[in-house]
Length: 68
Image (cartoon, rainbow, N blue to C red; front, side, top):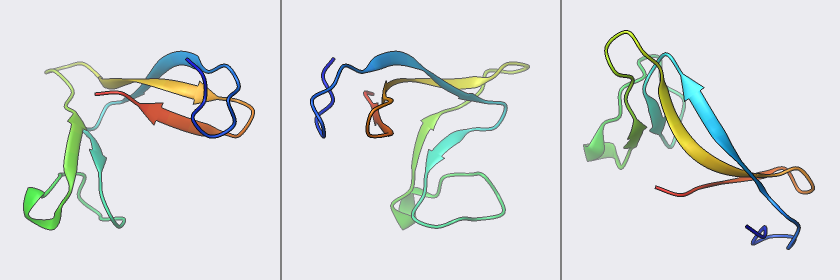
């Protein structure tokens, strides 16, 4: 995949966490997405596992693209 910002080649990989991976507009102490505030859950860990989302990384301009 080509980077949409600088047109360099991107690498496919993962971001993972033992906690849910959420998009939030501001930092909160509890890592739970609240859809009423426009927050969005990207991945939930399975019981005893880790949450992960596939991403594309551009090392040139340090951007990440998440394709859900």
